[in-house]
Length: 399
Image (cartoon, rainbow, N blue to C red; front, side):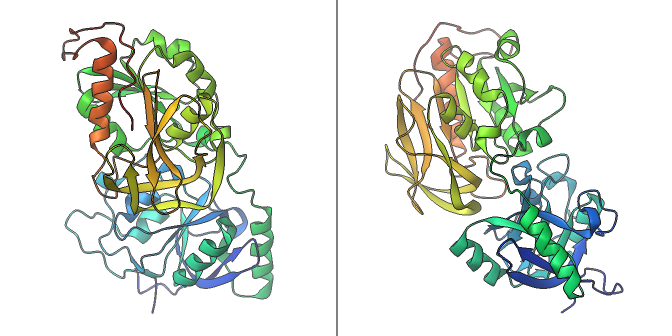
């Protein structure tokens, strides 16, 4: 089956080679490799991870948390409803490439303005289709996320170049990827009554939309100092999702030492990890991460099970963070999915309550953040800025 969405263009043979030498054949899609700034010498490389969502491929591809990674979709049929600017989660995709089984020949959705193939090409992202993604997923599941490289490959010499590029790819551990995705300048969004400063570690638009329901949000770069944050007189501070190793997330971990206890804090995904490190916890890399829209998480207080959207390769080690209650646990592998400070107004979750794509079971957490700010400041804030501002000290119950 021809994988190109344009039947008049002959497919270009390609291959994906993992760092252990495992090879997958396919056909090139998206941006042409030659001259592509993201794929020098006709090769794209990155850490290969798989995502299990059945829909929402555009939101996944535009999630900045995928910086440094090649996304392999487990669902076999991708691209059937095209793409639209409305579904983009960031200004551009930051992933290194896309791997799929079958690319839809035609897009069919009234909202769509371009095919997935054209969308990738417009943003300079290459992809490879026709890949046995079932075999690829099983391999990554069994041996862990690992670097890989893909590109046009019609002979043995091309395969050797891809193998060399895969071996040279550093992956995501020990690499600063936050600086690649964070905003260059602060900006304001939302019209809610609270004032929140959001650290952009790779923030998604769905997150700013949900925060915007409860607050006027000032989004600031990841390197913003605690003094700068406090000078903005926020009612709360938000720590966003983002890519890669939390140990390499820049100055935000140090800034948190000066913010904890002075303002309520809510963290999501990488935000949980940097908060955990700031509190004295330890991070580690999961074997192949959590990437999908159907991950079961248990609320330890109520026993309630939430089906969650997740996208992370690192986590905070359970039992390593002093002074917190561990509030949520992943039922797939027992990893820590949420904690709340006992004596400080701060909580965090590892999963994505904003989803996009994914279920909305956990959106109440944004309202919990508003409740935490109200408790800390002594009452609700009105839209015109009036309202209580007492020196509350409550922790606010957990993620």
